[in-house]
Amino acid sequence: MIDSPYAADIEAEERSWYEIASLVRTLTPAERLVPGYYRDPDWSVRDLVGHLGTWLAEAATQFEQIVAGTYAGHDVDIDGLNAQFLAAMVGQPWDVVWSQANAGRTVMRQAWAALPAPSEEAAWWIRKSAVDHYADHIGRLREWVDELVGRRAA
Image 1 (tube, rainbow, N blue to C red):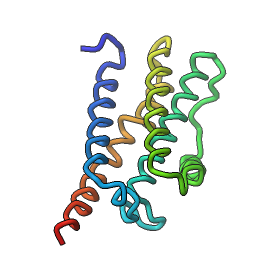
Image 2 (image 1 turned 90 degrees about the horizontal axis):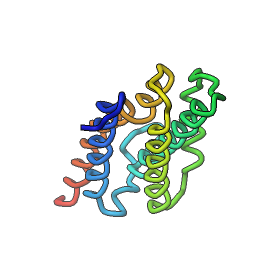
Image 3 (image 1 turned 180 degrees about the vertical axis):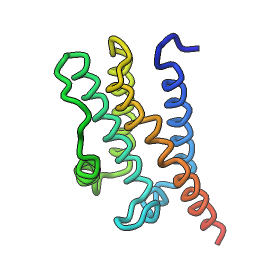
Image 4 (image 1 turned 90 degrees about the vertical axis):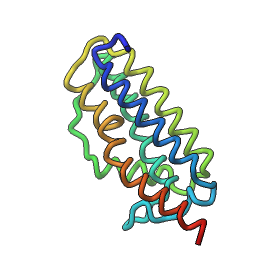
């Protein structure tokens, strides 16, 4: 058991991240680029991973601001950030997107571990970028991976 006030969230984040990684690895490189995970706009698994990775990197920045005492609060334009993050990753090769997502997760977890004490603001970012965010996407990812794998037999 992890000795942290965030132990349950840390374990939930890890468990869900590894499930996402396992699902992604089930796909071929070409399948990761097939649009259809979401429609309007069309998202592929690459787009989803880029989306998750950029939110993780943003959470790391927010945690660093909490530690430094410069945090301004989580009154953010979520739709605006989603559009900005998607635009930043559009057209990137899979290897770049996957590396960025893993790097974003790593710096987020490092910054999370550096938080001096639990706070409502930190908890909001943990939920928004990781624990609840993964839960928002993992069900659809399972379905989309099953659909893509099922197409192989056809």
